[in-house]
Image 1: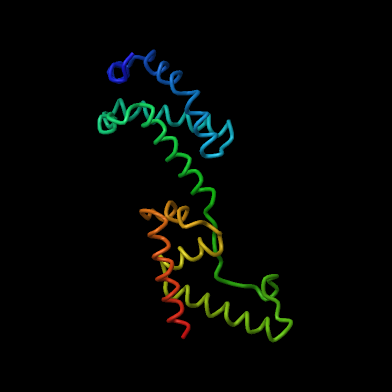
Image 2: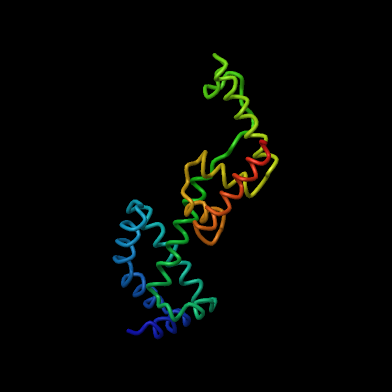
Length: 180
């Protein structure tokens, strides 16, 4: 059955059409998302369930017409990928504390070298606070959370990793200027 007739049947409330879409794309979707995005089978199944519901809602509401040229399979994959990325972003959010306790394991004042390091860290921390966002957030994600430029682009909604690398360079230049 053609995709356009499936869409028409879905709009009319035909539950068999939804079952057909579910069954037709389930195996390939689960294989794709587990292999490409390294998620568990349980996560993949949850994402597929969410994807089918979102797809159905979009068809009923009429917002699927804009994506119809891509086809149902591509549309489902797009919904699934976006759901997985949103879930990943929520999981990787890390809080950053501006205070360092005197007994913090990271900074021990046992020698002059440690004292100098501490002063430098405090200067950099102050510089980060002064330059503010988006530089502060970008540099924290890169240096403290060890995210790649492409991952940061997803988290901060930039076009791509190249934009992030460009901004990172400018932010580092701002910090250097501040520290001089």
